[in-house]
Structures are given as C-alpha cells and as structure tokens.
Image (tube, rainbow, N blue to C red; front, top):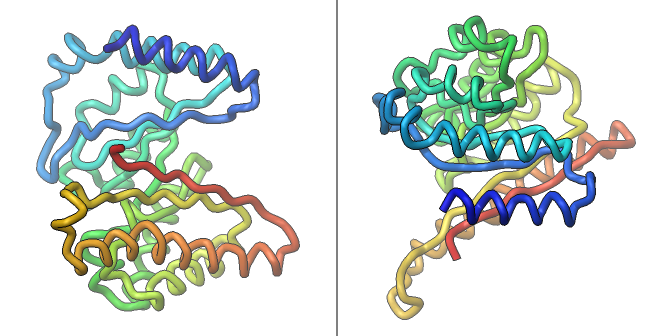
Length: 239
C-alpha cells in the first residue's frame, strides 16, 4: 500500500511541475477521548511511510498538511518529526487538545488549522457564543503566526446562517476582513440509491452545498470590499 501511494503521489508531483504549494493527506488517528493507536504503534507501523510521503512532497516544493480529528496530543511530536507542517483540524473539545497548551508546546514547529467548535458552539450556540469562541481561539493560537482559523469540521446542517455570519464578523473585528478562504466539506450517503431517505440527502446537501455556499458568500463579500482575495475548495468523499 505504501509503495502504491508513494508512486501515485510522485506522478502527481511530477505532472504538477512545481505548481503545487501544499498537499493535504487525511486519516483519523484520534477519538474524542484519546488516540486510536499508541505512539509505539505509530512508530512501528506508520512513521516510516508518513515520513517518506512528507519527504517526497517537500522535495517537490510542497508543504504538507494532515487531517485528523480527535485527541492526538501524544502523536503530534511524531508527526512533527515525520515532517508535517500543518495539523488540520485542531479539535479543542477532544481530550488533551487545549489550544493554548498545544500552541506553547508545538507552535514553533507546526501550524494549526481549525479550532472553532462544531460540536457545541456553531450548531447550538448563538452569535455571541460564536464571537467569544473566535476571540478565544485567535488569542490562543494566532500570536506569532501559524494559525489558520476555521471550523473544526464540516459546517453541519444544524448551523444557522446567523452563526456563520457571526464567525466572519468576529474575524473582521479581530483581524480585519477575510482575504483568503478555503472551503472544506465532504460527506456522503453510503446506501443504495433506492434506499436513500429525504432527510439523509437533505443533510448531504446542507453540508456539501449550503454550508460551503454560506462561507463562500461571506468571504466574497469581504474580498469585494477589499478589492482582492483568494479562495478555493477541498471536497472529498469515498467514491
């Protein structure tokens, strides 16, 4: 498996001919309460392949970002040692993932992406809660750089448009208007088409389309005012 994906990646980097700035990989290594594997297991089974992939990307001029949900504090030093540049997504509600502590321990070696709670604040809080969440995360993670502010995971169907607007307005007040935005959403409905329920497909569209649209809309409004900016999208689901 490792050889296949290394060759697959090598061909991508070769075809890109130096036009890629960053590459995203993804595998979840954490649960809500702790890592899914021990550091010893990581070293035995994953470190060599992880380091080979990041090394290949870096030799092609790319930064490397890895997505993992959950509590992965004991694995972060091994990811840093393996050449990771950006950890996505920082989930503060998971065990041992306090942003201020992680920034103090690893902020000189790795950047963090995420931090805005999608388990409680965005779906179930109000605009004032969102404002406080954004201010807190910026205060803990932005000093010295190395922080990409964003929701921990997909903008869920339960998140109101008002809370998305509140998130952007809080950033406006703390850092100025958004001039760069990357949408990242991808859930699917893994069943036979004949068995798909209406509420299930509505949830897929709410996350993959509506949530992404609302973030793009708020970004575009600010980029238009600033007369410039950049945007992109990352979308993926099992095929």
